[in-house]
Length: 142
Image (cartoon, rainbow, N blue to C red):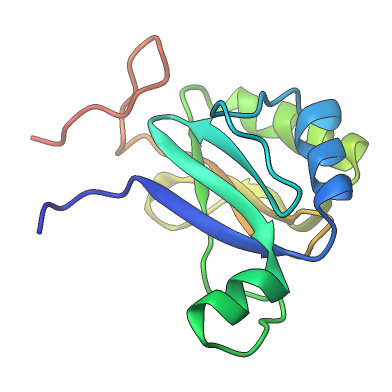
């Protein structure tokens, strides 16, 4: 199997609220031609993030509904350290909750954690050890 991530699914309880948060609050654009009442997809740096109805995906997967607490934490890498604080303010304005304020972390990172309105955790980070090009694409490590 190739070492590759193409899509990450996050369970949500309210698709309308999630769309408002990501699209109106953060300015993200839905990805894909087919729109659904049970999910919405966003292309994020070459990976699709699918926000899908938590109960639906639990039934499909044969699992119990999750709580939306830490288990999978998508990470958004930023090219510039100063962008971290700007994005933190954007998250709060859009209705997200910063759960760990922007600060210096181990390994020279500068980051913060937040949850979206469905309780899904995210990290936004500037990492000097993961250089990005002008388009925001991570470069291969040497």
